[in-house]
Image (cartoon, rainbow, N blue to C red; front, top):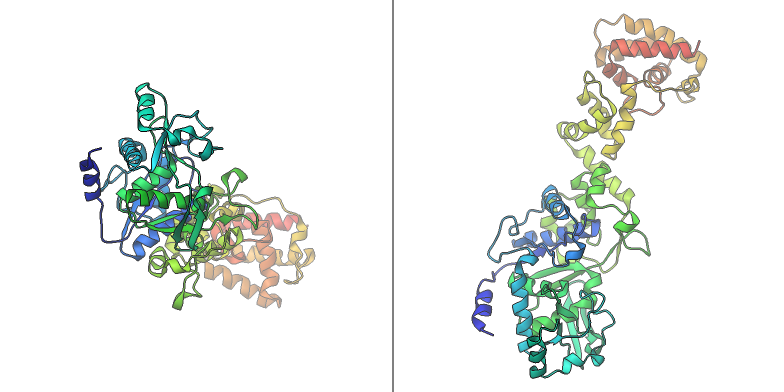
Length: 493
């Protein structure tokens, strides 16, 4: 084969700084493990002043899901994981979609045959050409075919795959940034398929070819690929290429025994967003699923994306599986909600407030002020504020509260005093309502809580509310507040 093609491909490879790639298959939404891989890959590039590449791996055509590729772009964009090269923006080693690189894989597979490290296999198709199946190297007659026999079969149009020719003896040692040196016996490795009958590469082969031709310096993937790494190393060696830094991340688990999986209902990134979690909180938590900051920031938990890029280093990655704890994520989310500016929180909360309250006259900003310190997930908001839209049915025993020193008789007396006092208010604002109720409590010689509790129950119809009696009355307005207080008084007649 003409070396000019391969020389030209080598000449295009960028050199000189870190280059990482996130290479998803468009087969579904981005689950937590995928998001972590994308995040770590982006962080390696950014922490080293390098280049982050998006590559779409779509050679397994039977598993492609419509809309999944759009979800990849959308998720990366929302998360701020901006890529420097990719299918949508191009770059020096385009194309960045594997199905558009078909000719390249065929040339390199045949090149490997010429080099003696691969061979044509005409045996009957295994169940999945992406895997070796039950392939037995010793029993395969194709491995020993002469060049003349191979050519005869090719001339006759016999269907074939191209398999990697693994050395029959010896060992292969590869190095991983997390797990260190790992050595395997070559006899335990199968002659994996590199090029399928349809001319498309397998996942394993396409990865090696693309990673080299794109100048990838760090390959981040799940630890389930550790078993394939020796074969990757042998491919690099067969071509005479340098091996990138492997970073095999331990799995994200749902419990001590089971990996997270969409099939078991474990959440994807989009599921978590739909459940009311902020993107920033998700990223922060996901970053800590298998990585810990070191040095001066060892005790720090809350990081912005920029701070993660500054603090991230490979030495902080753990060999141990990480357990996804939804309660811990909720804790992070609450921290992020409370840290938002009032304006930003209102912007995030308003759609959820409107889900619970259709009345446009009610002030969503005032409601958001009550919620910010009392909300862990945005999806809690509609239920928390629904009493503003309509007074729920409630039992009169809610008026009894030991801490506030109220019972039905006391509450009735308090409402009898409160209703005319509020009716007489000249202005309906926070200070006026507060002063009215506080002065009334002083005249009646009761604690403020003894008045506030029956007012809150009558105004909201529930014991737990965002905000107290004064805030609720202010937001409801004079007319609606008094209507509800009179209804509450009627319950106690």
